[in-house]
Image (cartoon, rainbow, N blue to C red):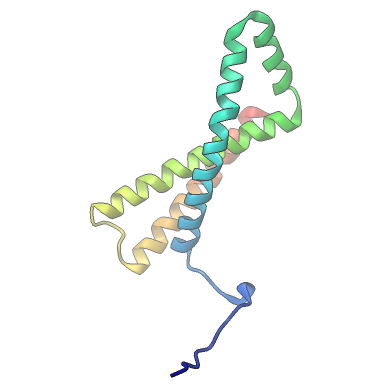
Length: 124
């Protein structure tokens, strides 16, 4: 028996709701944080090793590329914390309905963008 089901392989036509986007971004931010640990440990180790190492890290922070990397790490950490708190609240029985789940996802995205803007202004 062969089932004839419609198959939609065009991912650009699929409209995901905000809760799904928040879930995907939460996973992506977790992966980014795994790589960020190495970068942050390197900068911490180098800056604490000697005065020259501290000056070296300060020199890195003067470059746009390294500052952008630090911005990405802090932005991912911010989103991951916000989405994690949202998931903990969902585990407690809040925001489980579709409407409230989408509203909480939109809220954390707005807060994340605002905090990321503040981080960007602070770094640059």
